[in-house]
Image (cartoon, rainbow, N blue to C red; front, side, top):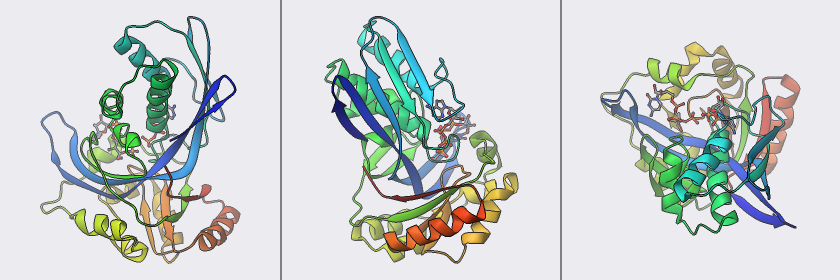
Length: 288
Ligand SMILES: C[C@@](CO)(OP(=O)(O)O)[C@H](O)COP(=O)(O)OP(=O)(O)OC[C@H]1O[C@@H](n2ccc(N)nc2=O)[C@H](O)[C@@H]1O
Ligand SMILES: Nc1ncnc2c1ncn2[C@@H]1O[C@H](COP(=O)(O)OP(=O)(O)O)[C@@H](O)[C@H]1O
C-alpha cells in the first residue's frame, strides 16, 4: 500500500492482488479448505482518505454501489481497531473504489488492511505489521498478505504468510467480467487433488525474474470449478488463450489476467480488449 499525507489528511492507496498459483491441499474439519497460494499485488488501487472527526465513525464510498455501513470491511476494521485499542475516537474515511468487488482481486481485503495500517498511524498505536496482520485475519483470509506486499506465499486459509522476492516487474492485462462469482459456490465445487501441484517451481521462477517461466507455470485449482458457474470466465480464457505469456483466473474469480512480456505489449492488448467489451480492462504492473 502507498501511504501519503496531504495537508491534515492521510491518503492510502490500497492495491489489488492476483494469485499466480493457487492449490488446494485439503479440506479442514471446520469446512474451510487448506490452500497454498502465491500472491502478487498490482497497480490497480482503491483510495482511502482519513480525516479528523470528533466522536463518530463515518465511511463514505465513491465509485461503487457498495455502501459504507457496518458490513463494509473498512467500517468493520475501524470498529475492530477501536475495540482492540480500547478507544472511542471518531474518524471519517472516504473510500474511492477502482478495484471491482467480488472479482478475485481482494479489493475489500486490501481496503481493510489499509484501514488497519492507516488507523495505526493516525492514532499512534505503534502496532507491528505482524499484530496488524493477525487482526486482519479476523476479518478475512486475504488481509494478512497486504502487510507483505508485493509478493508472498500464503498457507492455511491465507493467514500464514511467508514473504518472497519478485526480481523483475511483471506486466498484466486484467479482464473483469460483469458476471461475478460467489467464493462459497466455487469452493463447494472444488475437488481436492490426490497429489497437489507444487508451488516451488513458480516461486523460484519469480525469484529469478524469469517471467516466461512464470507464465508457463501459472496455476489455479479453482479455475476448473469456476468455469461451469461463470461462462464469462471460459469466454475470456478462450479469447486471450494465445495472448501474452500466460493466462489465469485470479483467486475465486471472475477476473482473468494475462501476463505480458512488456509494458508496451500490455498497452496494446489492453486497447484491443477494450474495444471488444469483454468486461472492465486494467493494464497494470506488479506494485507495492
Ligand atoms: C479464493 C481466495 C484466494 O486468495 O480469495 P478471493 O478470490 O476471495 O480474492 C480466498 O481463499 C478466499 O478466502 P475467504 O476470503 O476466506 O473467503 P470467504 O468469502 O470468507 O469464504 C466464503 C466461503 O468459501 C469457503 N471457503 C473459503 C476459503 C477457504 N480457504 N476455504 C473455503 O472452503 C467457505 O465455505 C466460506 O464460507
Ligand atoms: N470495501 C469493500 N470493498 C469491496 N467489497 C467489500 C467491501 N466491504 C465489504 N465488501 C464485501 O466483500 C465481498 C468480497 O469483496 P472483494 O474483496 O472485493 O472480492 P474478492 O473476495 O472476490 O477478491 C464483496 O462481495 C462485498 O460485498
